[in-house]
Length: 309
Image (tube, rainbow, N blue to C red):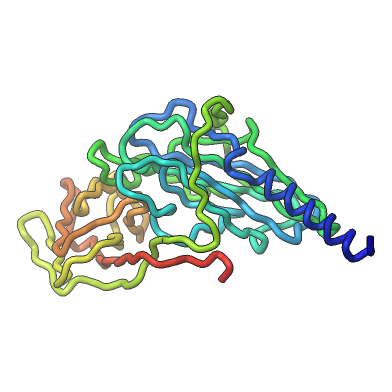
């Protein structure tokens, strides 16, 4: 056998081992220790890497929606990932190339999870980080008990709408250097609780923001403001506020938002969408319509994502 053929066989074996180890069907599920109907959850883990890998990928499966971060950078990119039918909690896996986000030393992988609809879910996410070193050998980092989690600042209402800013703001939840004293070890689900996983391959349907526009006009109706966009839209609502009072409660369409009290802040959905033409905004006794600086409709569309692009 020639040296070239021998090296080709070795390379194929390495790729096979790497892909087998990263197979989402073999990943361990994990969840917040006490899952409830409406909680969104932050997950995080850190990996020490002595040498920057030539390639690195993350395969993540979920029964809900998620945003994936590596070293504080959003890897997911799309809206409502993964695209799924409403009120279904089937397991869906997506693979991302994260090579450009990796670095020598500590690498922090973090996930913001939301149930797809209000219900307790014992399996929330499963994740595997794997790649290939400069010498061609595969590197696989498996799930283990070092994963930490805590409830996120957002949640769902029992009707499935989003509740934003419902707890103390922690903007660096996905950073390397934070105080994890209030974080809990994620519950690792046993192998006897395996479920079928739909693995989205290279090309699959996803959702993205296609257009951003402001209202045509607005009307003040008593203590409320109604913003009219001229035509109906499906997507996200983003409201920019100034000089709101910390703890001030606002209603933005079906959403609920608790203000942080920062000089400028934004309320925006993460894991739900709005379908409307007229948007009503109101609030508690601290609400003043002058606090609203901008209201935007972020229209979404379905497209075919090519992971090789």
